[in-house]
Image (cartoon, rainbow, N blue to C red; front, side, top):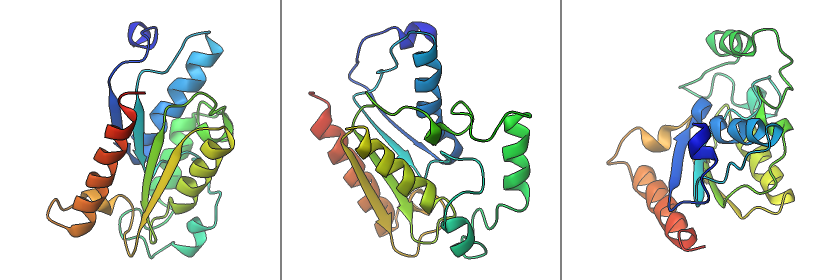
Length: 175
């Protein structure tokens, strides 16, 4: 991984979802603290990122028991967060990338749904990227729970989401 992180910008775009969507900000924090570059993607598409693993944000309340994928933080999700943190503060940017520095990130398109437990995480990530001067788009799909935009390849929301992501990637590949 370090050799990849030492590489200059490549013609690579990256899409991830949920907890893996927090990997890019986490890698960025690790790289910055070690004096490395982490610009290894021309653009990224972190769908519904778990950017703050604490129970912070309106959608943890408003979408609790509405999101039919994650359902609630008070269960396996909260236990997984504490296990992952392994005693570290949940506000540590290595644990919750929303507390890190987003300057220098590649153009980013985020995707979520109105019923997603991580809707607030996604919105907060979008706003933080914009405040850091990063080109960032946010797509929110009506009635979609956590990452449902990618569950059924025949669903109109899936086709629309990945068409938008592909167009976003195409726009930023030559930068």
